[in-house]
Length: 202
Image 1 (spheres, one colour):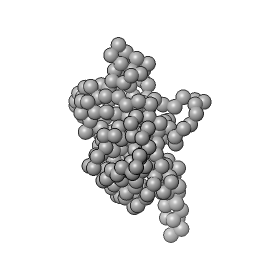
Image 2: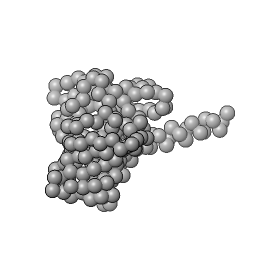
Image 3: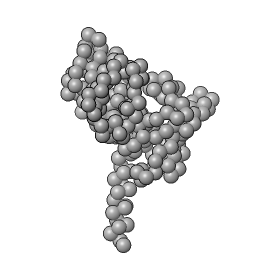
Image 4: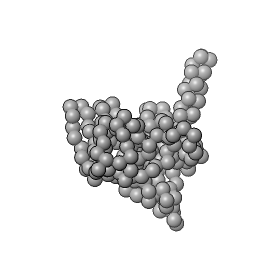
């Protein structure tokens, strides 16, 4: 489990195809602290570390086809800046919201507006998945725990403070950027229960 509080950004230094999978080698300042089998969120995607190179502060993760189909990982190239968060330790302060590292779908950035010291980002997603947002609700964008500002049937906006803009890959976003979205787990349970209730009432 994660909280959506990005620790650092890493850099993709190698991309290797292995049949239907892709192996990514990533460099990060705390790379010498990692170990094989450790889970870490990459732009919100929970991946297992399969190899480590402590002397280079690098490690390797593998994305299978299902992950590539549901996320933006198939677009990663060498040099890509990725948001990273290690799993939450027991007893730690919970600063964000519950993030599982299981991406629901991708969304596309439709606009970026600078608003006197902060930024307003709008994202659009495919409504066929029946995912929803609510104003002031929680959402994870590329693994970053955020509060929804405006909510529409297949669009939402988030406001980004300078700290988040600087320490995550939000500063790379522009119109057309594809991002990973994980909707609030509590909202998903409520929506499913209500749907089941309405079906039972028929």
